[in-house]
Amino acid sequence: MIVSGIEGDTIHLHIGIGQLDPRHIALIPLKYQNEDVGVCGLISREPFKRDFASLEARNFIIQATPFIYNALIMKRLEVMAAIDELTGVLNRRFGLRRLNEEFERSKRYRMPLSVAMVDIDHFKKINDTYGHQAGDFVLKTLAGVFTSNIRVSDLVIRFGGEEFLLVFNGASAVDAYQIMEKLRVNVETMRLQYGAFDFKVTFSAGVSSFPSDKVSDLPNLIHQADSGLYKAKETGRNRTVISA
Image (cartoon, rainbow, N blue to C red; front, side, top):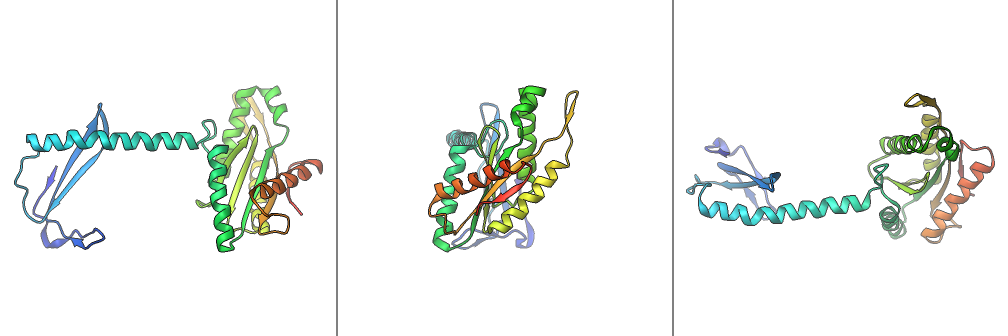
């Protein structure tokens, strides 16, 4: 596709070293193995003098397309390696790597960082009563609730089994507690339907924050959140506890 004779410099492209005001634009679709992988855009102040069906143009497309395709594949593999297949949130390995980055940034800039360890209450009973597929449905549902109700800058990590770790950048323990309570009430009031089954679920959570007298490193931060979760379960479940 070629767009020619653009009048009045209506298109302005900023390229770092200056500004381009093209009058002619060519868009060449790039395909590889019958898959659309992108578009090559050419811009010019003067009319194009070459036929883009020429051998030279075809050679350019043939050489460029595999590189773009391979870059897309690598990106997909990176995403697949970072995401928990069942829930669609970060898996534990990649999630902890991201949390470590946020913790180091929190130390460097003296910004608060809070985490919440979350465990679904009586999850074994759900599996035993309704089946493991229903348990998977619960995990996916709660993961969706978490990701839909936090900021883009925050993280949701499937920590293991029925446990999630939520990361709140720039949030104090009180801020994180308030967020978790809103999430907890949201989940508590939901009715889940899976096949012929209609049931409710709740979760317990423990919150910890940095900086804190009890938190000197990332393992301490996670341990304190886990301690808060333990207290929440000990005192009746379906509640959020800030680790003292």
